[in-house]
Length: 290
Length: 291
Image 1 (cartoon, rainbow over the protein chains, first blue to last red):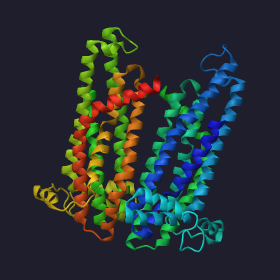
Image 2: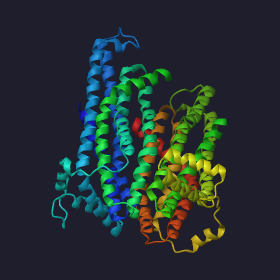
Image 3: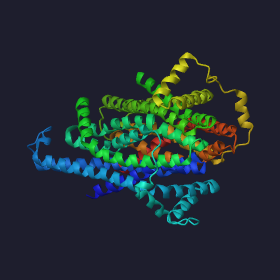
Image 4: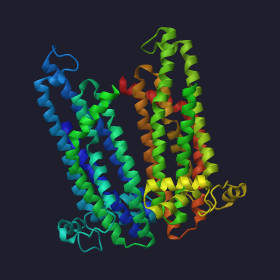
């Protein structure tokens, strides 16, 4: 159970930071220091890579503990390949699926928190970029960023309060940018959010070849990575470039950051629908491979 | 031998692409479409990571063949007994030679890329222009390919070798980057180059826990990645951003790229020196973990 709570916490963190990926562009455009903004964000993103590295063994161990307990309960009479026919194991599967759906919900929560924090984050980041340029010291940059978080001097409202307008739908920016980027973003997020979870569940559905099933999540992720690199990234980048050159209004980048976060949120909801089909697809793949 | 050849070619390709990443900054600067250039580059990076995925099992099988040969010849299958056998020692030195050859492939790939950089800048510039016109990555790739085989002239010349004069020019200019940066770049790139190979060799040095040793390469590479993200990337981004705003000339970024590529070349050579110490360090870490 503690393991499950750690997984939930890490998932919230991962999705919170990932949601901010596009608002970095806004900070970069406003300060005209796009690459610096990216490289500072990449330092925070190291946390995501690290958490992802922790998440995989945690999830797998949750699944394998379940399989082991079920095997022990079923006793010696159960042969390989017959575990899934067992009544107690079916109940366990239902519970595991519920847990995995809980992790997807944690992703939704993380994305929501990230979206609300966007205006605040942009302000903190602009401050951090300025300090980094002046001092070239990451320690001071980090300190300035933390200091800017609750209430920066010279601003009337504390940072957190900048989130309030986002709660009113009427104040949302109008969507004028090409829609295919956002549709692709929903798909990409949907797949990314559930791929590892579906693979772990597929492993539980096919216990004798669970390692093969879990490794196959990389293949599913590969599809999402290619879609992101071909459709989402280039269009978002050229919008940002145009704003940096002054050919587009800065508000378009604000719109981009906001709708990227919003479609990301919808993507994590879609992940609930993708969860079972993807798990069965991965099991099918694993059948073919074995 | 075939397997080693494939690994050699793949490693060359991977390092070629890594070094060409620097030229997309220049192309982005020239076209004033920095992020577009970087996102085009990341499509090409997908090819490098695909090559990496193919390479990993090939390399591990190289190590496991060595261990199997040793076990078959000497009859020792578990424990550290294998290491004291003379036959296995010979096999080990053959394996080390092969892995050092792979490091050499990294050097070869980086050298090839260094000559190819001006051409790559032209190629990326063309790719950015075509992407701007078509607005779609797959269509851009198709049009780029067509324009290459037809030899279309409208985008300007493509092939351009770096001249000795321009290289000498760089060395005469005042160095803009912080003095510690080349040193850090040599260290991190050196560790990157040898990380996986050293961990494979550590696996052969400690056959019972070879999978753990291989997974350790992730830890070593992760540390190099953190240093890169903390010490190298922010600094060079500052300089590129200044050039983008027009506070610096393109020549400054060219000089930056020049020093990054040269230190990368030196790093792949330094990796030969790092190879054994890194392997022993990883073996030590695995011992600590498993005992």
